[in-house]
Length: 139
Image (cartoon, rainbow, N blue to C red):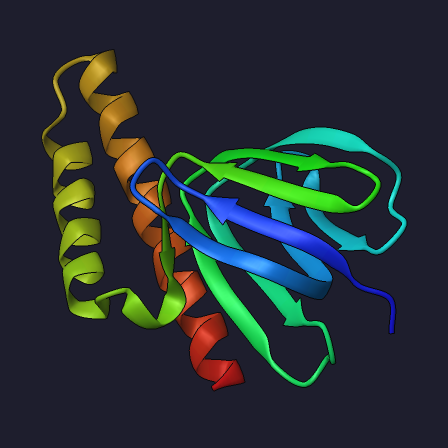
C-alpha cells in the first residue's frame, strides 16, 4: 500500500508525524480524502474529525480539529490546525456542558455579535461530540 508523510500541528503541539496510507478530513466543500500521489492543493478545514489510516492500513487515529489549513504536496501532507485534540482525549461531559451553555447563550442573545459567538460555540461542541462518536465506533 502506498504511503505518504503526514504532519498534524496545532499552536500548542504536534499531534501526529509519520507515514499514513490515507487521510480523511472535513473541508469547507465537504469531506476530502487524500491518498498517496494526490494532486497538490491547499484547502481550509472546518471543525470536525480527521482520520489518519496507518501505513499498513490496520489502525486509525482520529483527531478533532477546530479548523485550519490542509496542504498537500507530492510527498507530504501538512495540517495546520487552529486547535486540535486526539479524539480519545476529548471529555464528553465537558463538551455536552459547553453545548448547553451555547444553546442558553442563543436563547439569551441580545445582539448579532452574541448570536454569532453562540452559534460558533454550538457548532464546535456539535463537531466535537460527532468526533467522539466516530472514535467510539472505531475503538
